[in-house]
Image (cartoon, one colour):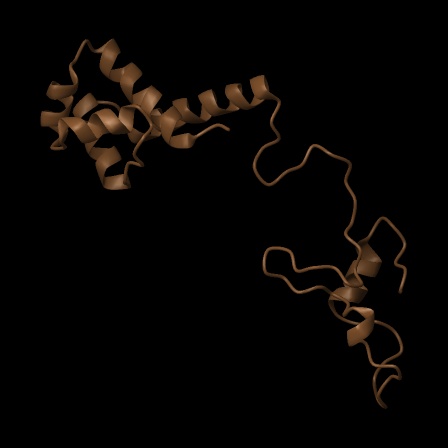
Length: 147
């Protein structure tokens, strides 16, 4: 697994070594303890945004530059490991079944399961789906099948 804090530490260390500076020198300039800076460089501690800004200031490099390098390194590592980006799968794309499906990311299923459905339609209720289900029916590339 690729850890962002480890990659961030590697980039900070690269900048420090390129400048031929010691941990002590950078820690004094950044106003952070030498031990904590060492832990950040080794990827063992998560640096807060304030701490990261202080370290970047001490190294005379912009935060944007550091984050750009981290992003480039992360993309290279993901390609090397052939890992799908976070939130994406490399498998075939399928739509989840609507009836009886579990909530995804805190979103309730669009259609209640069979046990939750009423056996008869209450009076005044439209026969055709409306709202999110109708939207799904019109935009889906696969036909809607009511269970």
